Amino acid sequence: MSTVGRRGQSSPRELTRMGDRISFIYLERCVVHREDNAVTAEDAQGTTHIPAATIGTLLLGPGTRVTHQAMSLLGDSGAGVVWV
Image 1: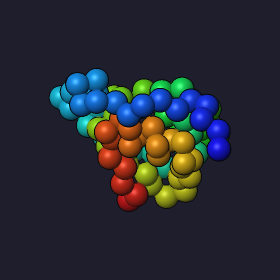
Image 2: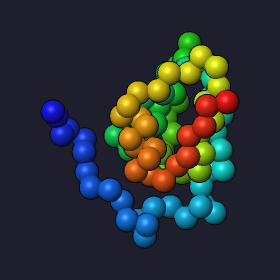
Image 3: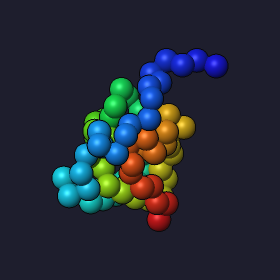
Image 4: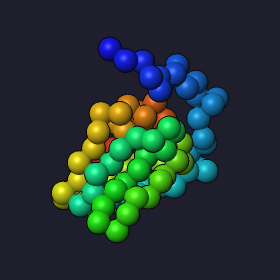
């Protein structure tokens, strides 16, 4: 198994305060990937980079696909993920 891009889990002191985060982001009809410490949302219009530490909750609508690496990053960052 490859360990590229792996690092230890963040301590609560290293995470962004909840008050400083974006409360939620809604995505639909896109593919969510991980690139370094950012989540990327790719659709027909292009790619958007979102720093994972700034997300409070990621809401995933219809037609959204998520990679395992993106879910791991969101979990390590303390973000919630909801399929709606």
